Length: 493
Ligand code: C2O
Ligand code: CU
Ligand code: CU
Image (cartoon, rainbow, N blue to C red; front, top):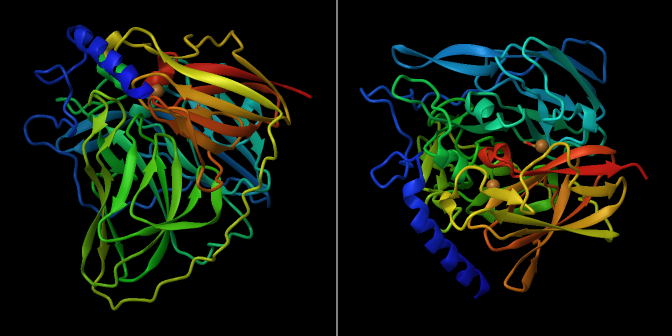
């Protein structure tokens, strides 16, 4: 009841403000959702084999150490026939190279910034010291090189990613191509017997001249719209497997704002991992899984035993606001094709994977309110805030003590869903509530980004172990850049 009333008011407000929107594309002022293509029929090549991603080479032979160099620089790729597209890439690759390391490793990565603006590398989801976190407080100037150095503690095995996190230009830098997976492996991985595939989903939006189109006012309101989805840099790639084979898929949502409600035609799958690694036990069979921006899932898929068949992995229609501006139409992502070979038998998934430790009772409680300035969606850039305030890196918004377990109630009073991310640690969802009712999380899982739908409250339980200043923000990158971010200061005990 409460939610409905709130939305009614908000919808009315937005309607009256609609003409003020300068960023729309269509006659109604709304951008087209299907992904605008440059005129003249030029389109991204599609249907090529799924690329396996390049791995960032380890320059040191020493056991337990990983040392490498990343260069963030402009690069021209020919994505459209007869045209080059200017991108910003890590080591010239779209997407960037995978960092593939092991629990216990000491990681040392030098970043050279050859971009025309400040950048950083943020190691999304990893428990790195605050000064190695690549936060907006720690820019790497154009022409400068910065060495990031950190350890990967036992228990961190999982699927992470890295991306720029520069003040107010994160959305732009990611839209230009800067994002890549970061995989941490465990020595005792219970799924080591499964062949695995990493699928990094990104978006690209090109203008009529084949260049990445800049963010619009609409993008800064509801998140970047109208992108074509790419998997490992390819449009609608084909992933071929022998019929009946079982694989572990690591799927990363590196889009700016596109919620991926994934389904695979004709198949159910098993969820085995989330942002921070494996679940305690497999969950499934599932017909779909929602991967919010910045989130990752690991799923186990057993392909159809029919030879020569094709199935579509797609992102189903998903509405993230109440007016349809941030509603995403169903879109195909990839084709799973079975070869003409004879089928193989499935591989088993153990019934227990890796314990997800309980954090124990919370000793403190915080409340974070997602707010909106102005009445409607169209109030303009910067209209989504945390506790009514825009980001200020010189202000401390929350204070925690290292080692304390805390419950954070994140209440979304806006008209849109927001994926809320906290740096420095993985946390667990405790419950979701709306209209006075709370539903406990169905299973324990480590996550670093929690989707908080409009009108609901998500309660997370978290412990920060390392002192320093950490970012708390919406991972719709335009919202982050427009100020939907806060500073958590973790004080030493
Ligand atoms: Cu993936 Cu603060 O970011
Ligand atoms: Cu992060
Ligand atoms: Cu948001």
